[in-house]
Length: 380
Image (cartoon, rainbow, N blue to C red; front, side, top):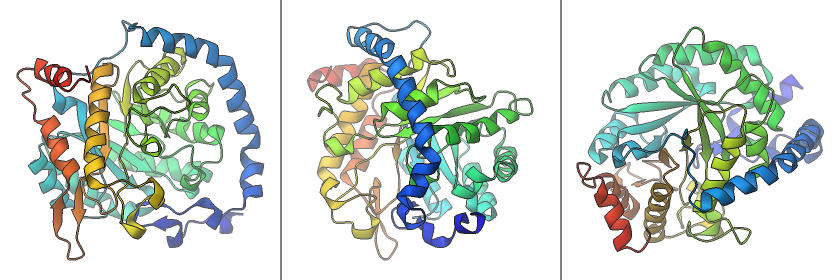
């Protein structure tokens, strides 16, 4: 099995910056064998928690706000963040674009299968002394199977970035088998290794479970468990692109606001998390990008629509008052970035870039301006 599961170059799609579908490496029967019991338990946990979650979501919809919940800042620069990777563009140029945009909250992806690039990423972080960073050490199947490898490389990464970076996302795409996890239990065992670092790095924060999309079953299971991992910050990659506009509904109920309420309700039920929520990843894939698109063409939107949806997403998340931070994935990318990359490596600012900057640079000395603009547009 070990030889079959070794990561090779063909498992990573450098165009869309995500793994290829897992069917290229494992059959459905193999995946089902490893995860059937784990998913059965996840369903049972969800059914048990659902009545309480539904009651809390209803209360949040009616205006209830828990007193111990960490609320967002009134400063848009604290609320709005950008996720970046050093693939579509080199580090110095990305750093320059971060400074030009004026964003201060950065989520940096680092691929654990490229440990030789650790210094490159550290130099990028050093070049932005005024930014606050979250580091996401992206796993592959080798690190999931070999906890000693995961333990060693995670400690090396944390030591290199400490204390400049104290926030670490544990797990990327944990409910997608192409990211290497075959069930929630496998992820929670993997994540629990990170707890060993707390004694040596006081003040370290772990962010998770960072479930992709709106999928309550793996989210609830990753919040209600008996494993060691404790989430200092509840993270979710709350994509809504399959619905188009964030205000469109899923299952007749769940627009973006209701999805936020649902995840907050799950966190309030959790025995393994603090009371704060970050959205670690969101975007809309753009049409006519070919191999650079992370999804099918039928789910892609125009650049103008992406800018409109970005605006609605940030406005609704802000208005909820329950989301502390929202990271847009990502800054420079041909398939979905705020900045397009030409064949000659030239950069072009897309409409979503200008919309992001407009929201980011509202008058921070007058926080009421954001709320007034929401009222003016009819969204408050």
